[in-house]
Picture 1 (cartoon, helix red, strand yellow):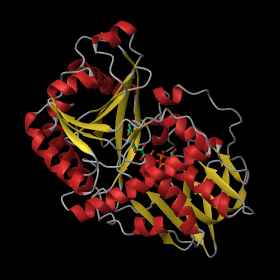
Picture 2: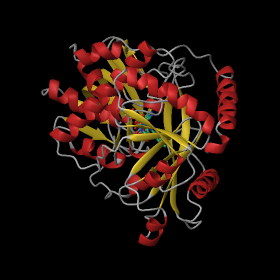
Picture 3: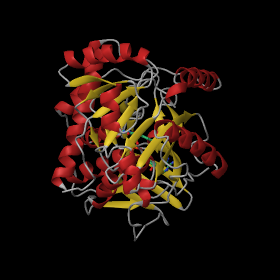
Length: 434
Ligand SMILES: Cc1cc2nc3c(=O)[nH]c(=O)nc-3n(C[C@H](O)[C@H](O)[C@H](O)COP(=O)(O)OP(=O)(O)OC[C@H]3O[C@@H](n4cnc5c(N)ncnc54)[C@H](O)[C@@H]3O)c2cc1C
């Protein structure tokens, strides 16, 4: 089965189509193979090439580079998260370990865009964790205490101030956190493709079917050829499990998002002409919603177990209707049919929302499992797994390795049953927030 994504992602469609796409057409031999060309794989390849300028490095992707989750996400580069797993972060020490990793992720992206002069609509606007339910104030107060103890600037906001700032009176309570950046994900990942050094060859529309190691090399089978490599980095995130990697530690979830057309001046005025903002839900299954720099509204309010290789047009349409309702609830004065596109994307989940970063056997490395927060961490993990695989060490690797490790997940059908019931429960808890 190959990955067959929709071509509806508004972010990707904002960019000019790329030219000179190369595909694997014959057998290849290389020193390094990176599988997956999103934030993780592209960052890994860039770093490998810098550390090993005389080595021959290949990056392969089943689709066009950057057109997986990296180009299809909501564009929040986060320093802190409230709902990044099925379990909450009650312990301060563990939460700090997590934010230490997020912080390094933000630095990695910041350094990258500075070094390569990238324009990705970077806006240090902070973010809102918001809810329409007064009761959720208690969760936000606890979260505010945790953040304050760790030195993150934040403040609680109530309905009146929120409706002025956001242009919707839907929300009754929110915690604003100053840290966190809003950006255009497809512009960022495109810049990482453009930044690939000359000793990296990118092969797209090349789906890895199977792989195995023999002695000192790894053999990889594709539809149209084989790649034999000395070392390999798996950067396929939501598709790690389908390649037999860390199968009891991660699983894919399918998300869908919609983007409206830009609001007209009159429409923008009816919502009070707010500045760009981003809202994350207080309950895990609530909606993520953004007002973009160019006055479009993005909404993501579904997460489900679904075939991660393809979502049908009919099912995408059904998700789009839920997103239309989500927008209408928040902006009743805007016209009904302003959604322009709806797309799906895959995230990798782990049980305790910890990420995967390791050598799984000789010459085989993996980074992924970002649980919906992979812009910064993916960039960081990509760079650092390349350093680790080049037998070097850094303070960043020490911080990453000090994080809590992903915990064991049962095999199917127990896993699917468990995840499905959990999602139903979480969806029910968040029903007013979808
Ligand atoms: C709708 C949505 C909203 C999100 N919102 C946010 C957000 O606001 N902030 C945030 O930080 N994160 C967010 N995320 C998560 C974030 O996008 C991911 O964590 C991040 O993009 C992971 O990057 P990656 O490079 O590891 O994986 P990907 O970008 O998924 O790249 C993996 C690549 O591997 C390729 N691949 C898979 N299998 C094979 C194979 N067999 N052979 C060859 N290639 C293969 C895929 O084609 C893909 O391009 C969101 C994700 C989605 C889907």
